[in-house]
Amino acid sequence: MILNAVEMGEGRPLVLLHGLFGQARNFGALQRRLAAGGRRVIALDLPNHGSSPHVPVLDYRFMAQTVAEALAARGITQADVVGHSMGGKTAMMLALTMPQSIARLVIADIAPYAYPPRWTALIEAMRAVPAGASRAEADALLAPVEEDAGVRAFILTSRMPDGSGWRIGLEGIAASMAEIMGWSPPQGASFEGPTLFVTGELSTYVRPENRPAIREIFPAVRFVSIKDAGHWLHAEQPDRFAAVLESFFPAAA
Image 1 (cartoon, rainbow, N blue to C red):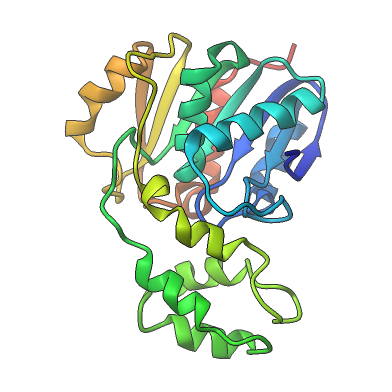
Image 2 (cartoon, helix red, strand yellow; image 1 turned 30 degrees about the vertical axis):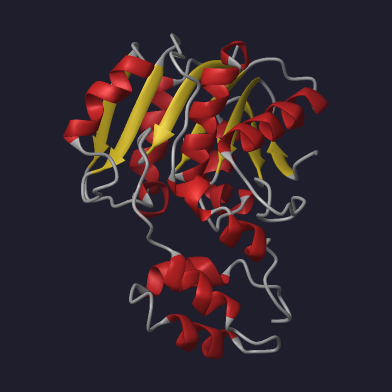
């Protein structure tokens, strides 16, 4: 499977991996800024997201393999990688199963941890949105299960432009939620390369008690918290998040 990609710039390759219900184009402003700094920046649509192929079920080993295949198709044997949320777990799995493919790793607001179910009601509400519903009608159907208007607006970017349905592989995502929320790394695996966990100050996705497990898997890890940011830290504090990346990644060679 070859994933859909949005590519900008020239230089050392840097890969951006989005979270659940996201897509490559969510990184537009960040991608342009990093590319302007002399990097070849590749934002990928993960399987069942954006314009990438749909599959019946997902797990992190499969998604990591698709990322590796997408890079190989572009002649990239090693890259710096940034992953947010589900994309962060995908990046972690890539680092643990194919460590030679990653030079430096940034994980944005997610831990190597099995999270409790959260999105079931939202997925059922998304399934209930009829084809042809207007954006306002779709938003009203999601509102009872997701009170955050910003999250609903983000979810609605995954509808087809004509309102005919969802561009994402919703059924495959629904069938895979236990795997997406879970975490099953290779036993005893670790990634020795430079690693940065970036968290939102207002987020609860990565807790202090997660740090020992993170350090065990990523012994060269550092931690940074972004002030006034929640889980979607790259959207809520884009300048601060971009500055963290620019300071962590070496200048283009």
